Image 1 (cartoon, rainbow, N blue to C red):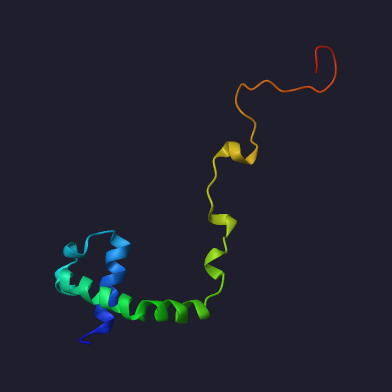
Image 2 (cartoon, helix red, strand yellow):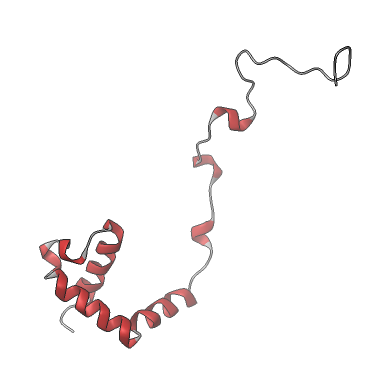
Length: 95
């Protein structure tokens, strides 16, 4: 194992960028070799062990959401619309 960190960085880069293995930047080495190593790790269960170790320490922090940073369209907050007729309850002609 020459450089596991560089290899894992290459795998993460490839999936984040959504590119084929052959299009990996040169700093990661030959994309075909990186893919071959990725496949060997998958076949031998290395990735399964990595994900199991990471999920054992996982919490739901990533799912928390601070609503102060969420932008919503003005109508989603119930703001009155321009030129919209107001509904009256009861009275003549009301349903």
